[in-house]
Length: 195
Ligand SMILES: [Zn+2]
Image (tube, rainbow, N blue to C red; front, side, top):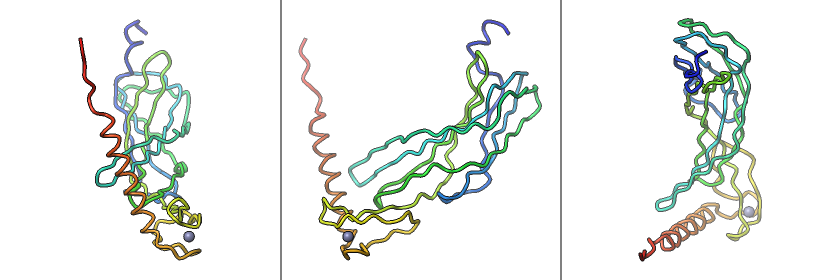
């Protein structure tokens, strides 16, 4: 291996392909990691890195939060031969995450990685459509009783324990978020600079 190849990843493409258009949260994610190599190399390991990203979006408020990344090893020590497509099938559990409000979205970022000794990795990223469940809470800070729902793909709008309209809680939360966005905007005013 020449000294220059250490600073590059192996020539070729890496692609991810999922078997289905969309998955429910309790299904397994299935598909293939496909290497189209343009040179021979030794792959130390093939893995998937899955990161759920929680996004909260109301009319004037937006936040995005990366949750813990989950890594799944798929294979190791494979000799990859130039121009011979290598396909690695996978079937793996989707990392669990729930949605607390109607305005919460969860996106699953899936990254395919081929580790190669002393060189850069080959990577690719794709976001499958995953239907994440709601787990809504009858929140005490907004006058609720503290009840929390089981994970469910459909949204319950009334607390079965105390009968409170959960829409009232969501509206109050949305108002609080918008208020927070307004006060953050005020505190981020550009500072006066003096030389
Ligand atoms: Zn309640």
